[in-house]
Amino acid sequence: MSQSLVVRTGSLIVSVLFIVVAILLAGASPLEVATAMWNGAFGTPNQFARLLATLAPLLLCACGLVFTFATGLYNLGIEGQIMAGAIATTFILRLTQEILPAPLVILLGLGAGIAGGLIWGLLIGFLNVYAKVNEIFAGLGLNFVAQGLALYLIFGPWKRPGVASMSGTELFNRNLWLPNFGNTEASPIALLLAVVGLVVTLSVMRGTYFGLQLQAVGRNLRASYIQGIPAIEYLMSSFALCGTFAGLAGALQVLAVFHRLIPNISSNLGFLALLVVMLVNFNPLGLLPVAFFFSALNIGSLQLPLSLQLESSLAGVIQGTLVLFALLGQSLSDRLPKTTPGRS
Image (tube, rainbow, N blue to C red; front, side, top):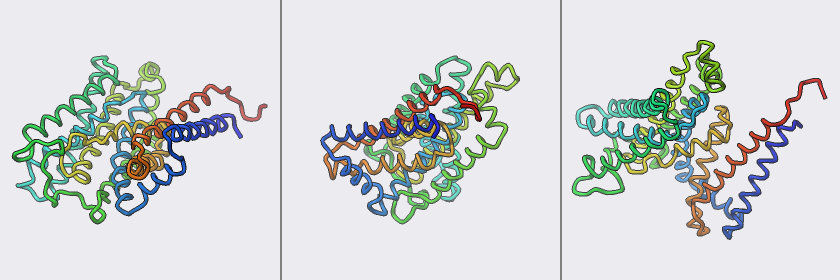
């Protein structure tokens, strides 16, 4: 067994032990917590459908982040890109729902969501590349702008007739909802779009010259520029691609899940996607299983206050611990001396 595998396995074991200790300190049994979360995610068809409804936008956001991480950038502004996509989708639906056929309105809404996220992503790219603002601060700042814009619209021009409510704008007509599995929140179209997004991400990053160039820029920006790679174009492209995926996720939140614009339309899926991508070490091959696992943790944790009187935020502790120790294992593994095959 290689030293690297030993280190990674050890970090996983330590993370599990840390999680067990955290649960015990909370006054609960790890087995009871695991059982409650399993039942919360898979106990009924409706709960499993909620898991799938979370998986689709989460997977899309994770796919988008692969591109910015490939260029060495930390796109914490993905939350704002989700909200920008949701706002753009809501705008188009409100504008066209009375004058165009429903299928066309839905398509325009999806396109508007993509455009909204793309523009928001490019704003971060512009601030980073041309104004020399760190992408972390630029992204977090634009998150607040997007959140403020959403609140203004919900409590202002788009408020429900006679009342402004934190529950959001008025529900769209049912003919503007994406088809779902029965009366659940899970949409087969949303899942299909997420799978297509994953296939596109894998194809681009593993099988195209563009993907190789993105990674070259991420490994050494100065060297890639000297070698004639248009580094600025690739940096901007990575933000545009991430914004595209995040904007589509925001559109799906409106069309498939909430059917309106709400203040927390992103459901913190952008930040959760950051954990997903870091846990797989930015490798798109691992996105689907890890995104599924994190979706199950998110939905399953809702059962904790009901059955064990524990805070649902325990899921965040579990997710953060797994990522922390995975990154620690990766860092320690990278520091190990490299061995040459055939030599002792």
